[in-house]
Length: 178
Image: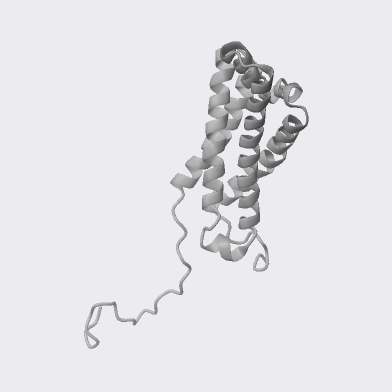
């Protein structure tokens, strides 16, 4: 019944990564595109308010430098969303999934996303923005949870046929019994 199903041999980290990617790709891509269209207005929107307040309060950047910082934030968010999107494409190819070829894209997305959300969380704590702090802490916990599942999960063992009961163990002479 499950023989022809696409998710037949998925691991827990695959499912967790897909759920994570289904959140981060649209959410962070929309935020990044809003920043590209209107950098200052989108920088002071709810997901980016901590970074915006930190930039304006502590770094004292000019208008053009603030726009550049907003574009760098958009580039970072698009990069993370791109790695998660690449992971989604790779996970759907059975050959790649069997040899765990998706792990690199997921690992880079998790690493960069964790770094970005961690620093955003630190900035939110520094400027006293509690709702942004909760948002970034939640995103960081989701990313770290998936990373922990990937670390704890044992590597996939190749599916091989069981050895017959009367087979000779490797390294024993042909006439000797194992």
